[in-house]
Amino acid sequence: MFDPFTHDDGRANTHLMWKSGKREQVFKGPIFDICTVQRTSSDGRSATFIEVDCPKWVTIIPWFRNEDGVPMFVMVDQFRHGSATVTREFPAGVVEKGEDPMDAGLRELKEETGLEGNRVTALGDVSPNSAFMNNRSYFYLVEHVKHTSGQELDPNEQLEVLSIPVQTVIDRMGTGIYDNGIMMIALGYFLREARKRPELVTIR
Image 1 (cartoon, rainbow, N blue to C red):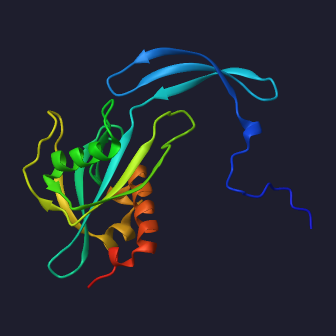
Image 2 (image 1 turned 60 degrees about the vertical axis):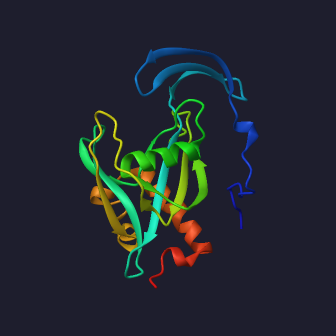
Image 3 (image 1 turned 180 degrees about the horizontal axis):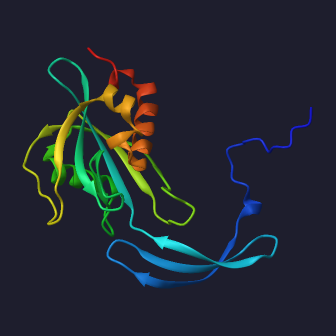
């Protein structure tokens, strides 16, 4: 039977790469910049494309067991200006220039929640939207979190910290207040880790 599709071998098709030419900043903003970049395809086509120049982003998944042995996440509710809605998210934020992503994540965790943990696992990093954004988003699991300080929020931050059962988040992610796409990626990484370590989701 004829199969018209190329099969996955885990490698990118290098013949699809476009060569980059002149790059020019056309907008400078407080969070991201916008650039134009000229690119040429392998078959000779040339065009100018938009590239959103963003800082690296980091998301921390804080995990602990409550007194009943139930696996829990720590999450934050906050108003998001892009969607003009309140969303429920894992602690997250911008990686400052020159800052290690893990250090940035632990800093954001402490600033937003006052929490620290005793085990940190790098879950992975992705391009959040490779169509036009050039940054990467990093994800870390922090276990056995406990309060060590109060919040240290930015001037325009307003957060409410909550403890949510892991299973509740799994059941609701991608719906209602849990509709932040980066959090869906974070949960996907967590579930992949939980396949190796089922104790992350099982009740004692």
